[in-house]
Image 1 (cartoon, rainbow, N blue to C red):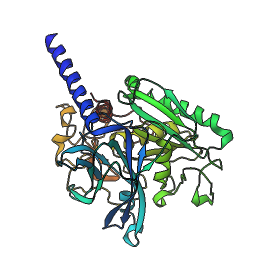
Image 2 (cartoon, rainbow, N blue to C red; image 1 turned 120 degrees about the horizontal axis):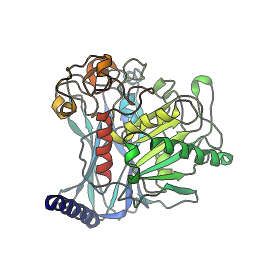
Image 3 (cartoon, one colour; image 1 turned 45 degrees about the horizontal axis):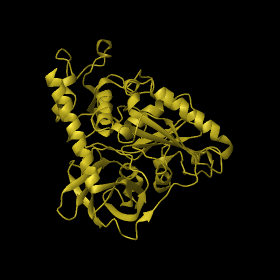
Image 4 (tube, rainbow, N blue to C red; image 1 turned 135 degrees about the vertical axis):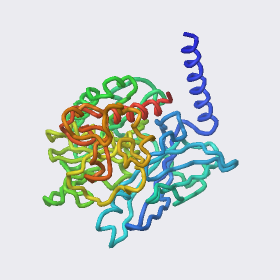
Length: 424
């Protein structure tokens, strides 16, 4: 009992120290850095577009990244003493585009936004990119003075917002903001009903079913001129507020938006850790990018499972475990290194993954036979290829829509991220 109380005391003391460090260096607002990523298949450049001061920082009280996930990384240092104050990994649509055939022949630019608590003193921001060997290299560094007149101050606009699920303050909870695209003014009731339906299903899925008390759900009413979503292959063009579209990266079912700044403008009306855009369409599709945002259609028979799958990408950095479907990019993973995604391995550094969760009686690699269907193992096929990349379960929400749930390895990765974001 004394040991347990001692652990509780140290956890509480650490949390208080972390909060004190936040208060020493940051305000309650958020700094949003809007920048562009441009280049082609072999070249990446980054340039700052705009800086914004938003009214709410809804992120984790844990300022320094604990996972080393993501193809990109932002690090913020105190310019006076070069001390690291904040870091996060993230991914982008740009790096996916770089693996397409189009990127072999032309240059393109993509919008990207990243947020941190608003600094009290001058900071230096570093944006880094992983190379093919998994090592980070610097793309950009810039000093930001919080009193600079060039920082745009945003405010809460005359747009309706609602806290659908309230389990506490942003510091205590994971805050998800839902924004609709392709909903007309007359369809706001449908939007609210869709959010309720999706969030209800969300909390039936493991591990979210036992973590509901750690989540807040926010709703932002984004009104589109047209109802529905753009579908270029069908010559359907809709005027929607967030510019969502099928055929992203020339993949019919890939539903995304390249108008990142607009999406973040709407999300910034409330505190948030994760952005989820729901698209008012019956067509199957979606997308989720780590520490960027998720997007899915709402009226397809498979929308509920796709909704949770895409959240797995954006929230916990989970990789796709399927390998038989057509994808819009090629050679996404370098099989000569260990991928950073917690649910994929090339077996080059399996000790850093889920080796401790594999029973000693389970063969490695694990055959895809019925006796191992419900076992944690090492099943070949994942990350869009049939050979050389392995997944932890025969089936999982990150592999198919027919899976009962996330596998135990993915569940642990999700739980770890929840605990990090609430500072435990």
